[in-house]
Length: 563
Image (tube, helix red, strand yellow):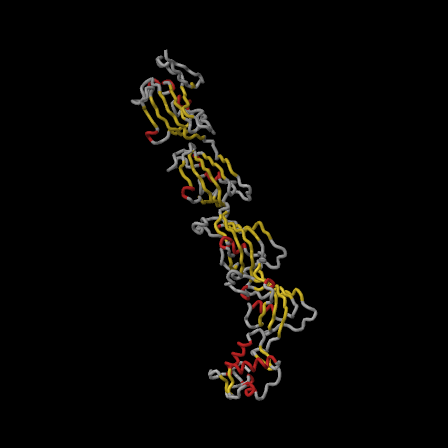
């Protein structure tokens, strides 16, 4: 005879075997068949727990008499408190969330001889296909399980802190009901002052920025019976990652300072500062960098040109200093943020490197490194000077050096041939003297700088050495006589004695006087250009020649600058 065996678990943990063709055996107790058991069972139902489950109710012949699925609503009830038929009360004990059981209940543990109206007849055996979705107990509290902790945790969430976090919200069976990730926006709120459900208010306390934790809460600390998209009396599970944390009382924090020594000067309000920075959020998310633009950020400090926190954080810095400035949102970009790069209510972290700073009232700082024992002839306006220099920025970046070219740099002092700061630094130097110059940008290359060489608004450093110097002419003169002027000057110039002096005659004569030591041209300028200008000034009618009537010495002139 063919036999088949059905494995059934009685509540008394007995296993019954029945032949396939045997008549049905009356049930003395409930029979439980576990049709699905989840891999993990964190918690099993106990007497006194509150459960939410779905079920299909059937008779032994398979005819359905009831189903929670048809009502699109779970059955919610306390276990072991006689709110269910006795057989179901006992069958639910020990179940795990997402476990599925086929429960067979004899009539004496169901509706007995009375049945249930027209739905369940007298002495009916009932079969229930049960899927457990939720379990909790009125004594439950918030459970927190941290599964990632950052290496550095300098601060933890406290009551009244403002936080930004991402989360996935699920029911206990894993059903997703909400996620900040899908909205691509953090959830931003105060903690511990009632802006959140009580369970989340508790679950966020003690978290570090970057920490990830699972927060599980009973409905009494969640939405209770008031859930809309969430089933009533549902346990909630939030997978949270904390991205940001601050308190409205926070000020600017300055850490990780690297201060160069010596530090001769610290920035004050009103200074103009050039610095590099990397900007990130508190969780390390990058949002901006001056390095990526290969250009410093240049601004006045203490005048409201930058966000309040940066204005404060840049005060008291040294040139070359590196520091981290942590700025709460009320001193940063506030509740609105900047759009895509900086979220609303975000704490900002700036790692900065101070390149240089100056004040609009600064003058050239001149330090004499060496002065010869004999230093009597000092450079003045109009002198032609030759000097060597090494030029750099305040951070030591090389700009230029005359030593690389093997020749001096030659200028006439006071002729606007160099930046004003260099003019100032060269004055009253003697040959052989060496100086160190610090030139603020308004006396250097200004706000424009020199493309590819000197950044805009850069402080300049020059180490200079005076090599040679030639005395200039008195102010306003480009040519002077070294001896008394000839009484018959015009006749001497008029080589062909045609009573007019041509440009060639004029030029030859002046150059001859210079070569013979009788006259002197201003040093450092083009001699032919000077002579050409002298001739033009004498040629009053512009006909290319000078007549005796036109010819005058400078001493006789009121508006011309020539002989």
